[in-house]
Amino acid sequence: MNKKATGKLFFLAFGLAFLVLFFVTASFSYSVYPDTWYVELVTRQFFYIPIFLYLFVLAGIIATIIALYGYISIRKQNKRLFNLLEELANGNYEADIFQLSLDNDFYSLSAIETLEKDIDVIREKLLELSREVQKSSNQPKFVDGQTKEEILEQERHRLARELHDSVSQQLFAAMMLLSALNQQLATSDETTRKQMDMIERIINEAQSEMRALLLHLRPVNLEGKSLKQGIEQLLKELSTKIQIQLSWSVADVSLPKGIEDHLFRIVQELLSNTLRHAKAHELEVYLNNVDNTISLRVIDDGVGFDPQKKTVGSYGLQNIRERVAGMGGTCKIISFAGKGTSIEIKIPVIKESEMNHD
Image (cartoon, rainbow, N blue to C red; front, side, top):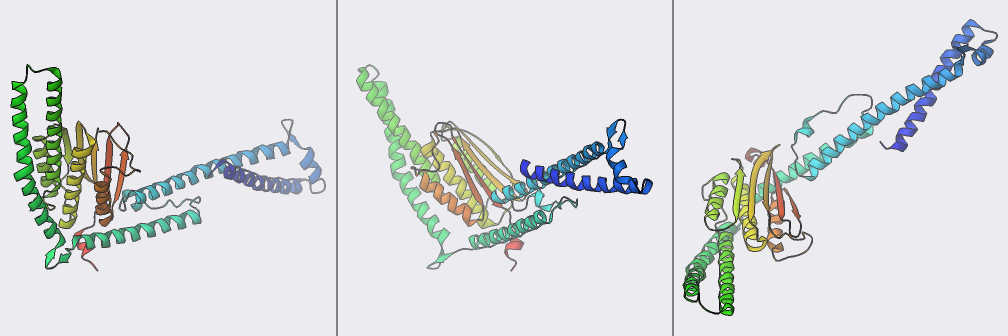
C-alpha cells in the first residue's frame, strides 16, 4: 500500500468515524434536549472547547489508527507475496513459506487471497513440470541400440586416451627438455633467456589447457559412486595437478541416478571452464540441500566476464544452462571483469516415487 492509498483510507475512515460520532452525539442531545438539541449541539462546550472539535479530533485518531493498521497489514501481505514470487523465480518450489497459511485477520483482502491461491496453483504446475522434465531426463535415449550417454562416453574415452598418450606426453617431455636447456643456458644473453622463459610459459599453459580438456573428457557418469564421492574425488585429483587453491563443502545428497550424473557433468564442465578461461587462484565448490532444493555454487577469483556477451567459454555455459533447464532448475551467473565469477544452480528435489507416478 503506497502513501496515496493510505491517504484515501485515512480520509474514508475519518469521514465514516465523524458521521458515526456525530450521529451518536446528536441522538444523545435530542434525548436530553428534544426541542433545542441542534442548538445545544452547536453551542455546547466541554472545558471551554466546542463539542464539534472533540468530534473532529476523535475521528482523526480513529482514522489514523485504522490507516496505520491497514498500511502495516497490507505491507505484510505484499511482502509475503513478494517472497512467494521470489522463491518461485529461484526454483524453490517447496520452500517452507509455501506451507504457511494466510492470516485470517480482516485485512486479508479477498484480492490478495485470490492472488496467493493463483501463485500456489502456478507453483504446483511448475513442480509438476519439473517432475515431468526430470522424469524425461532420467530416462535413457537410445540410438542404434546404444544410449546417447554410452556413445558419448565411448567417444570421450577414445579422445582422452589419444590426448593422454600423444599430446600430453609430448608436452611433458618438451617441458622436461626445456627445463634442462634453461639450466645449460643460464649464462646466455638476456634476450635468449627471455625467449626461453616465454617458451616455457607457453608450454606450461598448454599443459594446463590439456589437463582441463582431459577433465572435460572424463566419463559423464559417476561409475557407481555417490555424487558426494564423485565430486570430492574429482576435486582431490585436481588439487594434486593444478596450482589453484581448492576448497569445497559437499553434502551427501541422494537423487535419481540420471540427475546425479547430470550434476556431476555440470561440475566437470564448470571446473573445466574455470581452468581454461578464468586464470583463477582460488576456486570454491559448494553443494547442499535446502528446502528440498539442491543448490550448487562454484566461485572463483578469476578474470571474470560479461554474462550478456558471448565469450570463449560461453558455449560451455550454454551447455550447462541447457542441462539445468532439462532438470527443471535455474542457473544464476554473476561475474564482473577482474572480480571473479559466481555460478549458482538450483534443482528442485523430485523423489523417484513421484517421477514414476503417473
